[in-house]
Image (cartoon, rainbow, N blue to C red):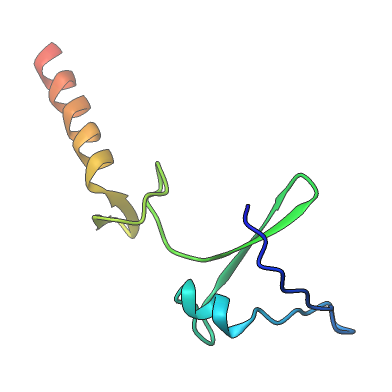
Length: 88
């Protein structure tokens, strides 16, 4: 993890402002959803992006029964179904 040298204080409601320079660099805009993780003793913030239900990849997504699946996982499922059909 790279330190930015920027320090912010929490307000009375536990909020912290993410500096504009960081928001611009990470393409985070007002009202964008942010995920919050705990990694050991660190709090990690990440711009929320929907991903594949199997591998969480956020690229080349398609929807099947209201679920997102990436192309790679879709091909794996297709291969499994083909193998199953051939064995029967």
